[in-house]
Length: 390
Image 1 (tube, rainbow, N blue to C red):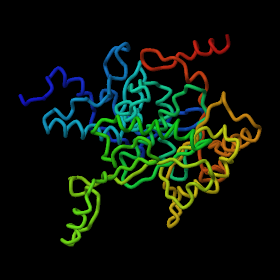
Image 2: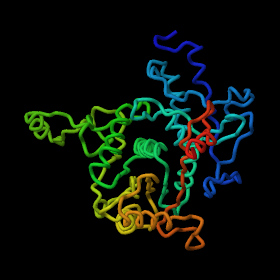
Image 3: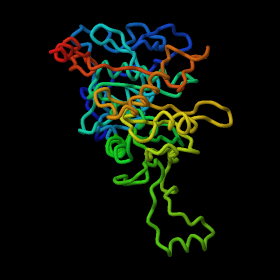
């Protein structure tokens, strides 16, 4: 047996992957309604091809999906097989029986559970309420004329972990994309979003972490490109004498090309992303803004950065999020937030194509969605409601 190869009993826990499932939306009539939002699910496979099929209810739980820390100690063929299975799941998602229910887990949800590292350095636990949000986000991404999603949620809903995970997944998978962030102040977006995503990306498993420019602590941008190599003046002169490009990059040191994507944050002023080409955007706490109008910032500036000017098509998706308990202290902030919410109602489209005024869709997550979960990951809503009432 090759050195470092996992024992059979160790390897079995990673053999749950159903690698042949392809998410087929074109031939599906499977739907689910979440907060009045109709979500199209991919055509489900036969029951016996779903994870946990045939197990008793008490065993129908989400398995451990984390990438094995010792993965790169395995034999090359085993690493390749695992990586192929992993990226297949990341793209297609999978179906599973949990507590007797046949559920679809999106590829992004799979990434969140298998790769994301939370601020407390722990892995996320499976929550059915989180899965519902990932389904809503999937619907927005799959809707060509939709610019994104507006979420109003209770405190401790976990919205920031989900959104930052979404941005990190996209920026570490798709080449040459720009992901941006804004909030009520520049300090707020740095402390609550950018520094957190930086911290978590630094802890990603090498299987899903592209090469970046190096130390990102204290930086204002995360760039998935080659690190800058320290080159002396003499070395640069020698390169020039040989007719070589006198660069300070390390392209020649790597077998694979750099991904070329980036994540940054911007001041809360409206024009921060003017002239850009944003593929993902987070507008945090849009209900607390007391200076800049987040509605105007979106409609006049950021939204324009998410349109391909040549073809007039939407190239990016945004997520607006805020809490319900701590809205802005002045009436104006409430009016701005209400305008964004009201004009993102997919149930009241402005044309036959289903467009809303803001171009986004919306969902509401109540305090009951923050309830403690049972051993299967479902919220104990009745207990939470009693707690609120009492």
